[in-house]
Amino acid sequence: MGVVNIHGGKLPEYRGASTLQWAIINGEDSTAATLHFVDEGVDTGPVIDSAEVVIETHDSALSVLGKVLNASALLLDIWLPILLQGEVSSYPQDESKAHVWSRCTPEDGLIDWAQSDEEISLLTRALAAPWTGAFYYTNDNKKVVIDYALSPPEVAKLRKEAGRAAW
View 1 (cartoon, rainbow, N blue to C red):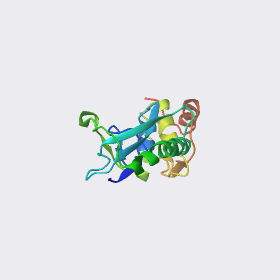
View 2: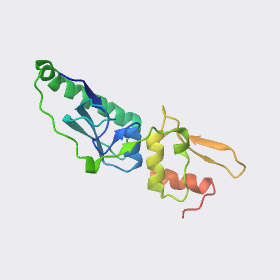
View 3: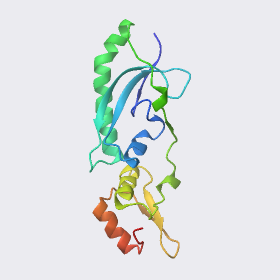
C-alpha cells in the first residue's frame, strides 16, 4: 500500500525541516498539514490531502504547531480508514513550486537591524521558546537572547533601547 507521512507544511513550497519557522519568517498567512506518500525524495511524494492552517499575527511557531497537530489529527481521522482499505487517490506535486528548507540553526536567529520591525517581529515569533530564540549583540559584545514573540511596536521599542537605528 505504501508509506504515508503527515508533513507540517505546504507541499511542495515548504519541503524539508523547520517549515513552521520558515513560513512565519517569510510572513506567510497560512501553512498546512499535508498527508502524502513517501518516496525516495525529501517530502516529494504524491499528495493525498492537506488541511490549511491559518497563521495569525499573534501566533508563534509553538501555537502554529498546535494548530498543525490538530489539523493532522483531523486528516488521520478522515484518511486512515480509507488508507487501510488500500485504494487512495493522490496527485503529484508541482515541481515548479518546490523549495526545500534547511533546519533552522541557532545562527538563523541573529537579528539583522537593517530589517524592518515587522521582519524582526516575524523572526522572534518563529524562534520563540521552546526554540532557541532570536538574538543580537550589544555594543560591548554581550549576547542578548529574545526567546519570546515581539510585536512590531515592541521591536521598535527594543531597537531604540538597544541603540540600533532603523535603516
